[in-house]
Image 1 (cartoon, rainbow, N blue to C red):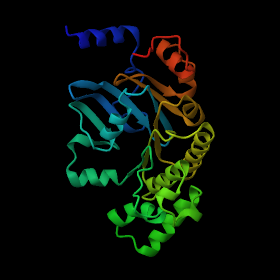
Image 2 (cartoon, rainbow, N blue to C red):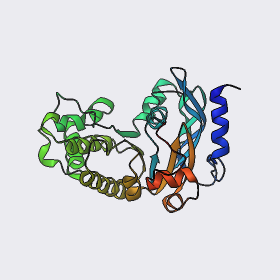
Image 3 (cartoon, helix red, strand yellow):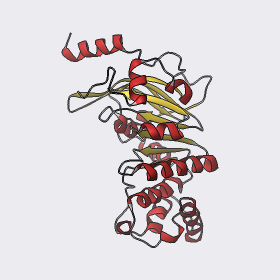
Length: 279
């Protein structure tokens, strides 16, 4: 047995990894995203290690976990920027690794992503940044684009900043502009990659309020990937805790914040006492 296999066996003994009490078959409860025994190695290092998780339809799901535990790699698998070495990723009933390129591009048009820094084009003003997906992927007229972009920017409180360049915006404003762009195609799924990164607690809380407000209006499946416990408490309806490439536990927020799992309890309380160390 290799050292890595021995460590994995010890982890399995120490924590009850989440696999039961979850209908990964897709029957019964409705899931937008399902990861089935997903394995991924990068540079010889195992990043996703038999990941099993399902993201429910029409809810705000928070995927929590310490830094370096595979959260960003999970996002890339969902949108087809990476493919598993083994296992499957199913989005709206479609196996992502098996899609042709035209099918994958069509799926991506149904997914909005808010990246950490907003990922805005520095040479474009806010209006053109938000309009970009519509111009790139649809035949929408400029008049219709103007209506849609103005509406999305009004939703996020940036109607007066549409002529500004990203360099003229604060960090929080750039994230809101990125949020407007993520919503402009009216996606079924919106993924937030560390949306609170670089924001102070007040602006983080305000962004979480905005995420909740937009979800109440547009519905769909929102997936917030973060390590911020305050954000999870504020907006999480369903929570999955990822550690070392696997889900330790997942469930509705009430269940997770009252879990008797030692790792879950330590992480969600932010305690120094418990199995999670600085290693």
